[in-house]
Length: 297
Image (cartoon, rainbow, N blue to C red; front, side, top):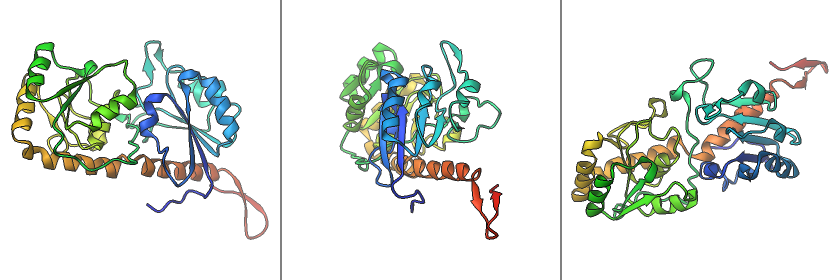
């Protein structure tokens, strides 16, 4: 895509460390900086203000502090990338909206407040990612989405098995995923909605085998891009993929290509940034040919 982003633009992303792999931090179309909110939103806001960004993206979480936006110049965009509620109840979005210029749900929700399927995932930082390596056959299973222990033991006899622990760092998880060939998740919620790893696995050329589908709005198709199997058939599915790996080569390749087309962070955030700048410019005063002022609609 030919970028329409002005040269020299500065972008700030204020988010938790679990979002780093979803941001265009290696992009060449803007000066992009990441400010980690795990140390507190106030500190992240102070550090970002010193950078003096033109556009700042705030990826909301339960701990978001509206005051953290106060010292930043430029346009401030709040982002809802997960269902807006937690242990403390619904997020106070009406209050948070007053601290930013715009709020995006990553795509317009179908109702005034979106349901679970309206939450679109953050994309994938694809810098350095390579096409599928079909020689990689090991299996990755997140502990938080693992089948019963006896099934795990039997899976370990089929392929080299790596279990991701919840206390592990995202970058360590991604390294283990990148060295594998299969990603398995047994979950009862729409896959990927609260967990970035399944989409990250597709982007790294792995075959994803899961008990539930991705949300339909994401455009990732079961059987074409990944496999959906009931929990009782997970072992059978992995066994078949291990014995006859050629049967899933096309699935892995399609998934890799689709994530490149739909979920590339560079492309997604360039488009979003252009939309943000256009929305802001639409409210500014411009000089007309008659040297009078008019408001651009």
